[in-house]
Image (cartoon, rainbow, N blue to C red; front, side, top):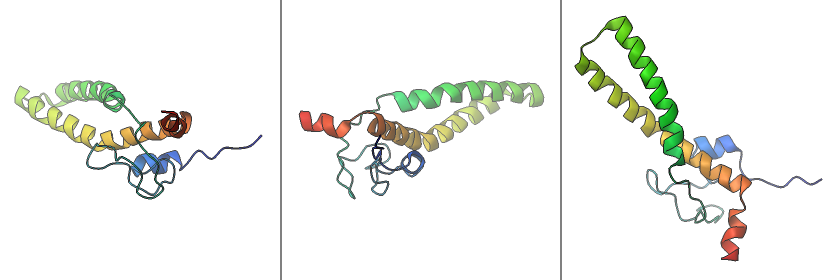
Amino acid sequence: MSVQNRGAPLLVAALGCRCPRCGKGPLFDGYLKIAPACSHCGLSFAGSDTGDGPAFFIMLPLCLLVAGLALVFELKVEPPLWVHMTVWPIFIGVVAGFTLRPVKATMVALQYRYRDIEHDEQSR
């Protein structure tokens, strides 16, 4: 049984926001816009569509976390309402901003690994 090369390790591609094939070229052209192709190995990213998946996989656990933290913060400290209205939107924005790129890169790398994007592009 032969082992097929599945590209760069998932953590390298995800955390480094790198090409899922070679792990060297940048995946993004801007903050969240996926580049047309890898500048190092030439892999086309045209078939990579993550849709709203990254936002969903970030916001669902983040909302549960914030609800729990806000409840504990309220019970322990009992701050005025304006503190909650200031702290939690900033917290959500910062966490979502820092995690969106790696989660999107993970989804693109998983698509590359488990879906034949290169073959799909050639058959069009």
